[in-house]
Image (tube, rainbow, N blue to C red; front, side):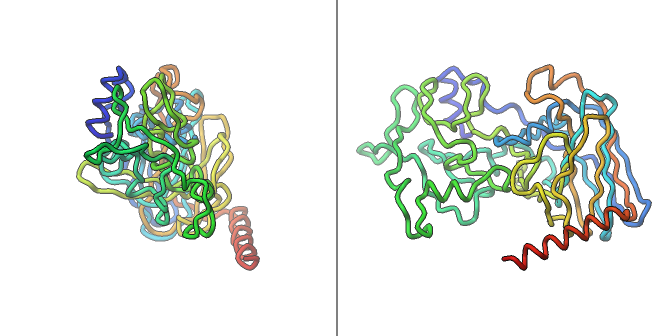
Length: 359
């Protein structure tokens, strides 16, 4: 969000809804593993009941809220291995859940960083597509366009709020030969879905599009709530069920690729059945429990991995959900693949083969 936008928030008396001060991701380093029996465990004490489950919604989650940005752990595999990952909470109140990704986020990365913002604006305060998180084939067609321009070529703005005055793009519902005959409305609806690894910051398709909000005198994402909502539509960049990215103040950016998750919260999006981003086919989601421990076993290639951990027992950001802080242990261990897992992996490989032959 640029400085002019903050100025508009202040003018509207809504400064309280600007993004919070940033806290940078602090990885817990579980080291490098290789042979069967290699293991590592780390304890941290700032977990909440809310941070992980926030990333399961369409508006995604704020990485700051995963154990106050300390709910991220990394490990390295020197060679392909079967890895057991477990999280054990000190209290059942936490109901731990976690997601596993291939790759690492940059050191000191965080939501809201200007190199990979939640939403982008041009000089006229019009939403623009994310440089990193849009689909590479996004046609960059806006649903809402300026109503007109003044004699100097500047976009007409509301005299009170300073927001651009917008109208629906007349081409929005017209079939476009450059989109294989789809209208822009149809293209965006078909090509953006929650947890698919992309964020549409131009039209906010997965959040219901844009709406006019009289309270601020301008167009905002449809999920905007004048009391509790985010002007940026997305609450953060943390995706519990999909690929996601962040950057740091030095301009370093990277994406981590979703492999699997375990939770009692139902999975949503295209990655729930099987994924291959860990080098091998793995179930995209495991049904968890409401106890103090969650565990999964994954077949992983050599490389670096991220684990995102926090609670799922409380589904809002109230003080009751965020406090008190709780402790938990996170552990990784290289294990021989159990017989049942061999059968499951074989079934998955066979299923993928059948799907390919059917195409």
